Amino acid sequence: MTTVREQGSPAPAEETDRNELVDLVFDGDFDSVHRPIREAVSDPLFDRHEGLTTVEQGRLAYKRVALVHEHVGNAEEIVADPRRLFAVSDWPSLMDTTTLPLLSVHYNLCLTTILHHGQNRDDLSEYIDELSSMRSVGSFMVTELGWGNNVANLQTQAVYEHETDQFILNTPNPQAQKFMPYTGIQDVPKLAVVMARLIVKDADCGVFPFLVRISDEKGLRPGVLASPLPEKPGLALDNGVTWFDHVRLDRHAFLGGTMSSITPQGEFVSTIRSRRRRFFASLERVHAGRLCLSSALVSAGRASAYIAVRYSLRRHTFAPAQQDVPLLAYRSQQTALFRALADVYAMTFLVNHVKRQFVCSSDNDDTHQLIDIAKAVSSWTMTDVFTVCRERIGAQGMFAANRIADYVSMAQGVVTAEGDNLPLLAKVGNQLLAHAKPTVTPPPHQLSLTDPWYHWKLLRYREDVVGYDTAQSMRRYVRGGSSLFDAWNHHINAALDLAQSRGASLAVKAFAEAAGGARSPRVARALRLLAAIYALGLTHRHAAWYMAHDMLTPSQASRIPALMDRLCALVLADAELLVDGFALTDEFLRAPALTSDLSAYSALTSSTATTEESRR
Image (cartoon, rainbow, N blue to C red; front, side, top):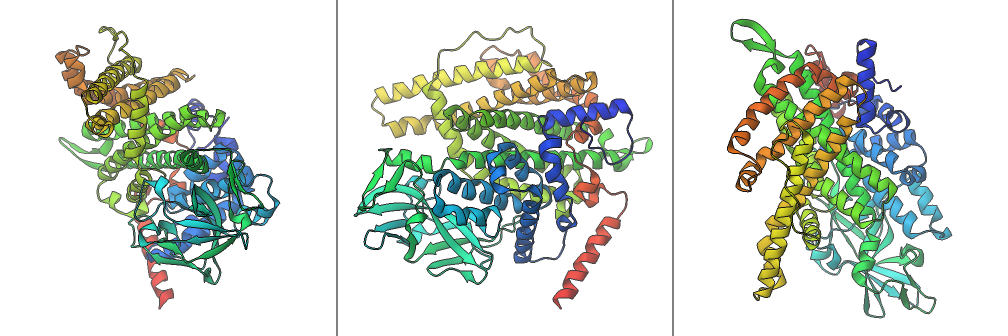
């Protein structure tokens, strides 16, 4: 039986309930996958350090990344086991948000790309060993200053020179500079996978990955140039603008995989005729990266809810005709935090569902679509959760030491990283429109508003109606003489709505299934309440549409806010149990807001003074 409780001695029944929640939240993998990584992050190196410069914070993040690597073991085994890869993203970032992109890029984007496209190649073993041991940190360079999400049109060139059997990597113009790779701290040894346009005999063969040594202990390698970018609040990443001045790469640097190669005669050959398809095949690890980011951000959502709920249970305030009451006794606090808690559980079960699909079939269009949906929906939902939790613990939420403020910045990075949310959802919306069919039978009116499955049926009905109507309208636009772009542009907001609706219905379904699978009556009841709160919020958001389509009566719609308040009041008795299901403790998070006095703040102040003294 999973045991995570480290504070107090709860009754056996309560411990059993808590362990069942942990199993549900971590999909049965807590002991085998998550616990070892959580223990690594408990190391004092992850203690809070105040008064550091951004560069000092960045250097500390690299040390923490190395510590995690030491604890988790063989890097090739990690990247071969997606469950461990996700867990490596989840836990360190709770204590240092900067570790998330560093670990995700090193393991998933850099090392795994080399392993995948360099199969059965002895000439890469030295580099794989270097990354596996983390003697060098892996980087991944795709985005260019002038192209953003339009990565298929990258300008960086790798020109093949048959006489020397080398590639010449070059940045042809300022717009082609690589934007935001980790090249600000330049004396950390780094190897990068660089996406560049392969030119063979003056012919454009498309964009491929190349293995490039960026820096060693002495700094940037010859021909590699970089300029640090400005600071970003909450993320001490050493982002830079990076460019290449005719860097010569040996043949082994080309990562064409099994699909493309350069013959001994200097000819380019490929099993894939389309340059666009070659490009997407080269970028396939981006899908796993998106899922890693989603998983980590939802993990941060769990930490935020834990901090906010436990703080609200302990913090007392004035109450009319009473001496004082806990903050969480106020219905306004309950409604805000329990709706956030419902969002966290919903996104946890959604991302768990997508992880299972990825483990079963990672290279699958349906799985890729699920990942894109989950990335957009979970990151936007967690952004709202962080805002609510930060505000609901008052001034305490403003301090980075209490974690949530840093999570807000991390969320902004995730919304943009590995594919910006809007283009991802627009792509999904277009895919859904291509398969839109006439509407199904609407759900009956007599079902209960507290039944999550009823709201799932409403969501699916709305999705069918919006999808089919939008697809038919687009066809009429095209038949009327509009260009494909004009037709798409006119309907893009409806397509985005459609994709978000699909994400919401998937989350409600995953939540309802998890609640239905709970063995403990108390756990099942608590999860059903939260699932109903989450689903009611979605229905309330589109209440006008449902009334216009005769799916809700005005009376039903007007009752939803009061019904959500009543459900939140019922959650109160299980609030502590629900956040304890996240396998977090006060001791692990080390947030001063969770202490009963100001001693934690005093310790941080002392550490700041020590840092300043050491500088002098």
